[in-house]
Length: 587
Ligand code: ARG
Image (cartoon, rainbow, N blue to C red; front, side, top):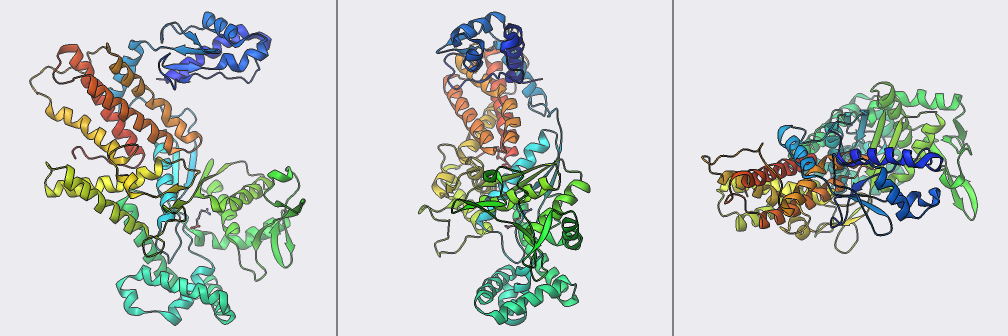
């Protein structure tokens, strides 16, 4: 069933075409959306205000013409004009009931699949070898997973690819470190920690000591030319890193279709650079191979140019270094070819932090030069900050690793559960704390606007009030507890109901809007739209539940209210699961 916004928008456009004639711009599409202020109606459009000038009349006069022409009698009451020319629609109760029935009867909870399914490749998480995942990876991992869930649910063909950094100089540094600085006891105790220590130690020496630098570069060359011992070490490091990362993915219930990693493309890099040289896209500059601006874009939109002292100066994309080594960009270009030609991707999303935005803008410009017209999008995000507004650190001043953040979240959730959930046994408390703790970390991330930085706060994350996982989970648990209290002998018929009360109506409308929100998440890759919707739904549910007794009523009233509780329960659970959160039934 198409959504109410789609239905009303369609009717609006039909009316506009009738009254518009030559005044209506041919590409104009009027939209009706959920009203922010529901005192005047449930849905609203400002089309009259946008078009009035073109029509040469006042917005109110145009609004009058629209409401005379528009035919919505099967969906809503007669539309009304408000303010300078808004048109408001109050939906029929029967329209709401129809949709509630659908939420109750289908496992798609009333949400249609997309009419334009695509093969979408999502590149996310992508940690680097020999380093544990740290809190900086949290955003990519959680946002990327949510997008994969939503895109799948909408019927897209999704391929998730964990593009791990498993090739290049850092690996040479760790191999060198392993040969010269390894502490075996430490390695046996905590391999990934020791690998990180080696990497950090050698990275410093690499910068300050040319001898170490050369030795590391030699190790990199040895690895890349297939030396047996190097390959063996590299495989060992890779296994350690991936099995560590896998533990985190398992805890977070995150799955990847592919983990190809940078090394997978290694053999293609040489031929790729030759091809780019022979087609004239790349050129040799200072013994390196670079791709320059082709001056086909406005300079301010051209990522291969930068304005220095009022001069547009080249910032080329380097694809082969002087020493013959390849760059991060070279691998990414080869990766695009593979994803399009071998995997058939029609859209590629890179869920990577905004510090890499120049890299991706250049990559997309190179692809434009190569006449690739697959949709490439950098789904970028900001930093996680501490309360001092500097990048988040542990009390000891180091970058916190993701698995200890998860441990701490669960432990903190446990204290809340121990205090509040007196009716649960130890086993249940443990399970509930885990769900709340992991849910809290995910929800805190997904309820933020992706593009901005945010401040990491345990108190906010685990608060039972406000837009938080515990609040959302509590709302869901409340819906479940109603059904646990239900008297089996009373006659419950969720098919037979009617809406009579304003609070019933308010939550009913909100429930209809689930189907409208889900596709919007994919428009600009914003999971926070879903989180905000679920929060508003939980709030409507709380006020509905306060104003409308459920179990003490009878007959149709009781059926209606139970149907609304059950629909809320279904939508909350479904929505939370799209965010990757699995709410318990009790808490
Ligand atoms: N491994 C990279 C890092 O940690 C992220 C890779 C992102 N994906 C890509 N195709 N470049 O910074």
